[in-house]
Image (cartoon, rainbow, N blue to C red):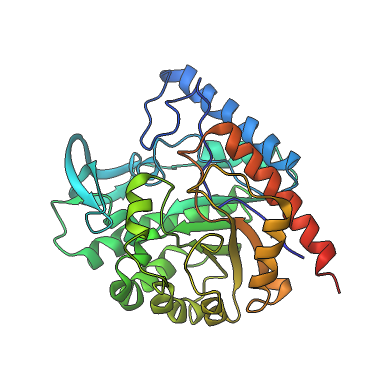
Length: 340
């Protein structure tokens, strides 16, 4: 019972990049940077294993940002002339690249880090990619003129890389779609379709991560405007339940998401967020086990995966390490507590 996994990102060590920030600047360049990225990946593989996690990720050590790491290997995108754009319906501003012509992959995107991850752990591995709708919401369109058309163009490229990741030995390919919680109508209308296009033909486990964002101030402030109940999931979960995607990741602990919304994901594995990424307070194993217990009212035990609410990239490294240990210990306690 109760596999354990991170949603995706982990903090970059201070010797690799700026700390506690999104879009951090690298501390090295060239071959030295490539080696530093792999060194940091190995560090976090070990930390996840020591914490008792059953599914291991690379922590996204090779990416400056969870979306832009993929875009750097795509033709048709201009990184030289970034423009300021509102992200997630103007929740915050960011300097983003522009889509200026037809999109195409330059080659493999994450081959080196996926194979490195596979070579350095015997446990199941998960690799994350940005979802099509979220990519669309994180670039400036100067070519397609239609969000859906551009999303499907990105979905084709994501599918190429996802199929290659499976061949690299990846057990779970996860697509990150925080935009699903912002553009709910579009997500249910064509976002899930674009997601399925990105996952087409995969013989490994497929997953989608839908969160309320990193623990940055803009997201914390936005959550305060959502009222006593966060019902965004209610709009897209039925479409996901009818989809071919195997696993769905969601926020739970310290959120205002009604737990009964998990019941809308009947037939899916549910990655329940039991670790808060918006607070530096470290959960106790009892708190993690309690959150798992509440979720068990709506998710069969064989389908429940204990996870983080979102990525931990902007968090203090020592706090993130402690939260990983709490995740592993809490899941172990829950296995004992809910064994009967």
